[in-house]
Image (tube, rainbow over all chains, first blue to last red; front, top):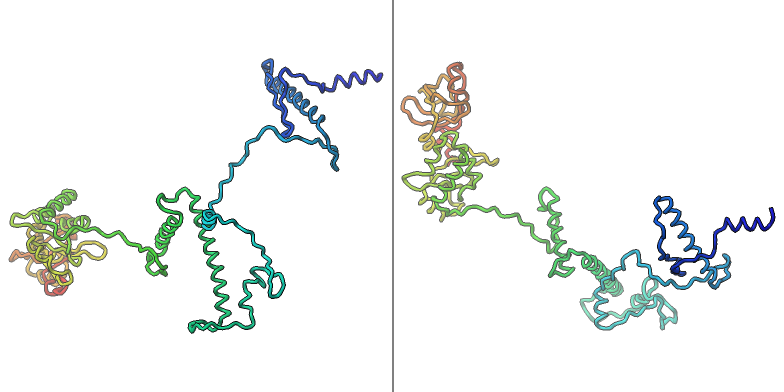
Length: 268
Length: 181
């Protein structure tokens, strides 16, 4: 077998890299996509024929795509020669819906009205007295500076607790507790307002309050005594039994006679 | 004091019909005046309308009794007839038993009526039916009870067999004086 024959055989086996289409195939190199808008031509009767026809079309479109990619500017990386793809032309719709905006907290609402911008605070603060950088709160925090003084003058208030350090610490902890309470309230309100079943005419907090009261009433039915001996919570709603409705004692004997006659006729 | 509810009226009438049958209607609808039933401290009273209206002005704690007490509802909601209702039950009773003089005292002390004591009885009394007991001599009502046997079976029974179970007798006026009215 001569060299020419081998080349000819090779050419016969390998498919043509130059594909001609009546209508040019649209390419989006950024997405590595080819859009063939040409008609399929003959209508193949068998599904197997259709399959091979589609396969041939796909190969041609892919060939055109590859041809274009090869002609792109290349980049030499550690993993080999890479083509630099342009930005995609088509926009693919996102899979998931756009995330909803988080409801604003009370402070955020207030800051928006007042035009207050959030400033990021540094955790570490410079302490002028000692000339050191200390954390603003927490372990060795600067917010405990006053309590840590070796001498604290007592105020002239007679009602003051003699342990001034303790009252200072309590005050500091109370503000932390207050903040965490507010955070909890914010979370509850956010959870409520996102729900569809927020009652019209009631804000989130009122709805939450109403539900809480209802659940207290429901929980009372858990014990045999219907909550008679349970510990009472402050502001707990009263659980009232429906009142028995009785006839008036002054019901006239005439009416009673007719009623009794009706009952009697039912019995016999 | 209050009128009876529908359920209470039903249980009451059912019990009463055991003794007087359909004659309850003549208690309800009387030609001589308007009468009504009132419940007070679980007891049912049969009372004339004018007296009932007067009794309204008496506080429930102060009111001891009014009209004629027919009986009481017990805690399980059943109705129990009292001897005080005998006046009306005897008047309208369907079935009667007459007791000989030797059985009268025994019955009035709360004993059942034996065959030996029975002077005569209504012919068609079924079993477990309310009957009014009369004395054979004077034909006065003494109390009431429930038959242990149907009238047809009485002739076969031995002399010591119980014919009527005791329910209430006139002796209770003395024995249960404090709780009766």
